[in-house]
Image 1 (cartoon, one colour):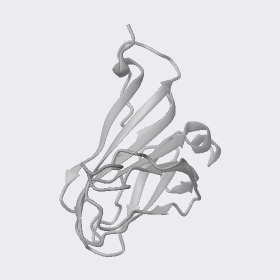
Image 2 (cartoon, one colour):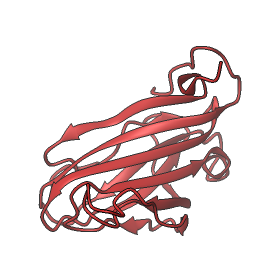
Image 3 (tube, one colour):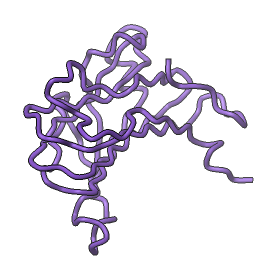
Length: 168
């Protein structure tokens, strides 16, 4: 049987909150994801109501769950052509390369999706024994940004019926 939950691991990396990336928050980090048993991690940021919030999204890599601090390159696409349920709101952009500086989220867009693709090989190449990553959003203002982050881990290195935990 072809069951999605046996092919990917779903992680609630940041719970939905009214000011998800507040300027006063010292870290703005998702939970740290351990890629030891997976080849790919896809972070999905789902946004709600916002005013002028325009956070900068980066991916940080490290050797443990407390050390992700090295910015790495990644790929991303957006799904914010229109506000749902308008036509075009579910059409993703082309896959785009992001440098270690990341990309800026679109301000004032309710119902936006940001799809961030992280390759375990890029994480591993960033430093000795690196197999952990976190999504980081730096908000330069304290404008409310309702959002959550879901991490989807795929291409398990050791497939099994029940996928092991990926949160340290």
